[in-house]
Amino acid sequence: MPFPVRKARPADLDLLAPLRAALWPDASLAEHRDELARILEGRPLSTLPLVAMVAECAGGISGFVEVGLRSHADGCDPGRPVGYVEGWFVEPAHRRKGVGRALLAAAEAWCREQGATEIASDTWIDNGGSQRAHEALGFQEVDRCVNYRKRIGDAPHARGRRST
Ligand SMILES: CC(C)(COP(=O)(O)OP(=O)(O)OC[C@H]1O[C@@H](n2cnc3c(N)ncnc32)[C@H](O)[C@@H]1OP(=O)(O)O)[C@@H](O)C(=O)NCCC(=O)NCCS
Image (cartoon, rainbow, N blue to C red; front, side, top):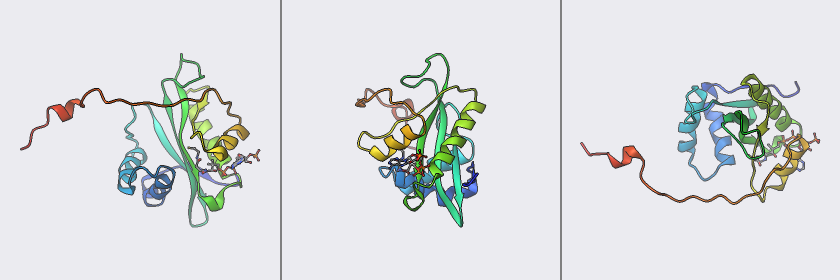
């Protein structure tokens, strides 16, 4: 394989957290470190399995993919869990050289090992480059949507919390 891809391990935390923060800048680096540490230790916040894979380059990591299982995804067979690309990022200097393809191939292999027969993903509506990359790697667009959220209550631990 031209770009070695392997499962990420706890020792990757310092190099990987900034890449994650570059992909999802809404969260702080500290928040990314906390969430990532759990994934690297094999205890992600998700109820279904979730792993991170990294592409190695001289002196570091050029990109990562976070891939997990979801109980369902738009356009996929609702009768079985589906692989899901939760995050996919390659450092700008390493793009358009096949790193993203190698990461996706590793993600697909992991999903097959989990018993999935489909893999799904999403990207932002204004991210044309990512859309082209998904299509180049065999993804078919199944939907375009607007996501909403509305808070309808407090989490149980917040309701019962007392100061000591
Ligand atoms: C999307 C991303 C991970 C692709 O990584 P990459 O290493 O550049 O991808 P590759 O070089 O392996 O390219 C894979 C295929 O996608 C195509 N592709 C990649 N970026 C493209 C772009 N901007 N425009 C058109 N095609 C593109 C390549 O041509 C290639 O197809 P080919 O082999 O048929 O030529 C990378 O661009 C990235 O990190 N983008 C910012 C973060 C992001 O948008 N992530 C996805 C949403 S979570």
